[in-house]
Structure formats: structure tokens, C-alpha cells
Image 1 (cartoon, one colour):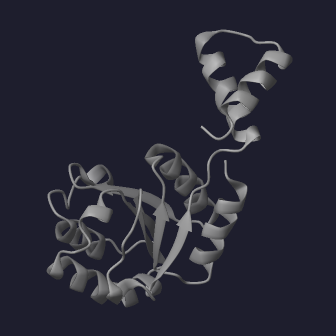
Image 2: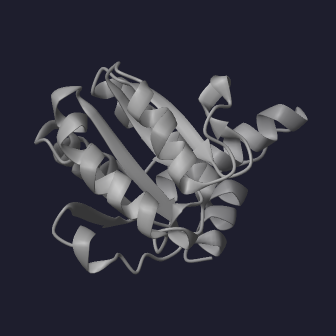
Length: 172
């Protein structure tokens, strides 16, 4: 899955970036990629959303500021995936809390990845955030995905038909 994007994310994390904006409409695909990147960087991957909060603890639900408070309380190395942040970055208190939290994240080997379809980062964060766009899936990724779906359905398909399906799906 997006080997170039995974490599780029790993390099940003290993080089000490504490905030990354990952632009994509494919949230589930992005989270799967980030889980693998976190594992490669020897960190936990913890997702946050406005509705369900931070990971299994479910703390920090309800507001971006509450999510940042929950992250602030976690001291273990981690990659925090914030799923709803693209709509919440204009909240003054949360923006200030995020800026105050950035120096602490580096010391803890933590990174916040904002995942959303598009980011209009506030001026205060433009120089603090690495930006990456998740490209459309390549042929190998589509072939793997189709293979998994067919396997779950107990179906087999000829190689020629698989190739046709992959070619027909590129760019969708």
C-alpha cells in the first residue's frame, strides 16, 4: 500500500516532525497505512475522533481540545491519528494547546497525524506541519485488495480477469 507514501511518512517521523497533515478522502486506507508506519517506527498507533475519543480509553471525545488533553496525558511513544481535525483547527484554545504540546511530543517520541480530505492549516501551524497527500492506489495495491475480497467470498478468479479488473479500477 503506497510504499512511497509510507517511506515518506517514516522519514518525517524519524526525523522528528511532531505534526503531519495527511490529505486523503480514504480514511480507512490512511489509518491502515499509519498503523504499519507506526509499527515500523516502533510506536503505538492511536486513533482519535470527535465521536469516540482517543483509542480504547475513549477519553478526549467531544472536542478537539479534549482530544489534545488526552494526548497530553499519554507519555508513551505513539503516533496519534486525529481523524476529524480538518474541521476543528480554527478553535483558538485547541490551536494554542496544540502549539504548546508540540515541544513535548518530540521528547516523548510522539507525533500527531491529522487525517482529512483537505487542510487549510492556520498560519501558526504552516511551518510546524509536514504535509503529505495519499495518492490513489496503484495496480499492486488493487490486486491485493481484490484478492482479499475474493478470498473472503470463497471465490477464485483467472489471472486475466484479475488483470482486467485492476486495469479498469486504476484512477477511480
